[in-house]
Length: 281
Image (cartoon, rainbow, N blue to C red; front, side, top):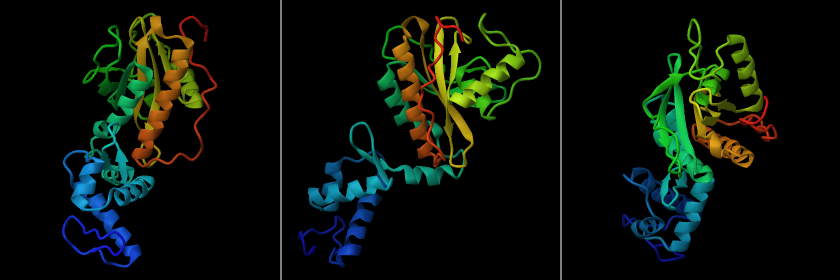
């Protein structure tokens, strides 16, 4: 029996330890419920199963959340936090990158209204492994499962720029009239991508399509994937482009942190504006 609240744990064990260890025991009990649940757990469910007062449950969950041991989804339900994801990711590809990335991709889609993709290098191509569709009737193609030339996409430029992909031998395929097929020109473009922190493809993969992409880092500082916002050039205004880059960088940084990456310096401010169709690079 809790000397302060008269509460008992959900398992019926006495919670009459000294106050310091008592708080640890309670927090550990809540954490165990979250980690072992098959689905995200609501605050009410945690309060009921633990037998703790709502005020106590709330206080402990906030402490766990501050220390990245639990996190909340878009509905406020609790999931294992970034600490667990980072530890699991150290084991390699067994942890699903798509599952970890999904909340960040969905938030990016909500903030931009456009098509969101996550891609990884496969040979000399980029494979799209996840997508969240745009909010408009006219949007992008469903790219999931498809590969595209690494030099012709925003995702690919990011992977190339950070050494996560390599150019194919021989001539570079031309997808549109705007595709960069000269290797020297492409390498200059990749240097720009590294310097400003994001890539732009303006109708280089498909006519009428513009995309903005940023890197996703894992715990050891290497780039493991790239995240992009793509949209028809017809509705990509200056404001929309700036918002796409800003939001994409924020969500990619969040995903990188979830994979255990700790940036050594702050990302660029985004003062360099993305090149739009009507501008001369």
